[in-house]
Image 1 (spheres, one colour):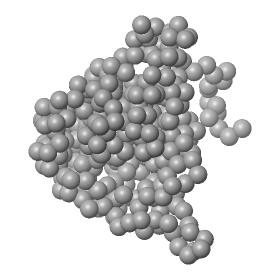
Image 2 (cartoon, one colour):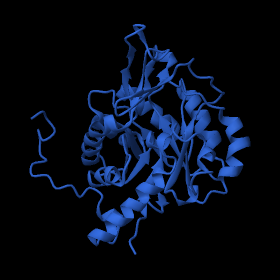
Image 3 (cartoon, one colour):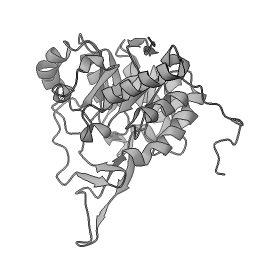
Image 4 (cartoon, helix red, strand yellow):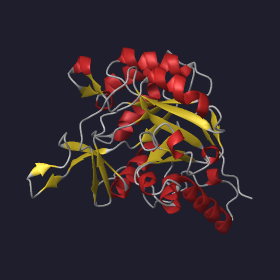
Length: 314
């Protein structure tokens, strides 16, 4: 028997496979298709203080190797989640991570305090790709000083582990990860979606109502993998890999590059059982290779020259 457990920001995960926020609703939507308790952790859809309607349609477009979405962070709001969803989620025997989002530090703080005190919530994941309305719409995750301030503000308001979900739409994601670590983050998850767009040539109009949206799926995996490797070399806190994970091999690549755990997102739209199939593939790999613990794989990438300049263009 192999040991698939990993330790993540003070939490004990039975395996490194998690869902990705925004791709499985509040978790309950997946329950008819798989046993949620078999997951290492369940990460639910991002929550705001008040309900959000999101963007007008069309807001999802399939692309070559992935999809674009511009949902607009639609959600039922903090209180409805606590009253309607959380009682049922407490019965799921796995770690529950709640993704939170706001337009100001105050909103993030309210969410951290209210959700952090709820039994059954094991950790919080900060969506820092949201615009700060008090700073002219600049995303929290694109300004290092703003990111540090937000994390410190949230850290002071909850004892629960704080995971920061980093945006790839920055010059140096490893620098943002280091700043997050210095500000008190317990872990980082990356990457969030890349900005992209799609055009209908017949109408000569954008396929999304918002023109641009977030690109996810297999198309972004090489970028995500590179960023996870860079960040894992830079910080001491755990790294959660996200981006184009469809198969066990995809997940294993992220672990080998330094991720402690992985989140599965877009793959679930085509295959609601993707997480458990990936987990089964990881177990098969460990047994076939005679590896006793999945933790032995983490950061095991062998690179001939990983010194300065190793990540530059060939």
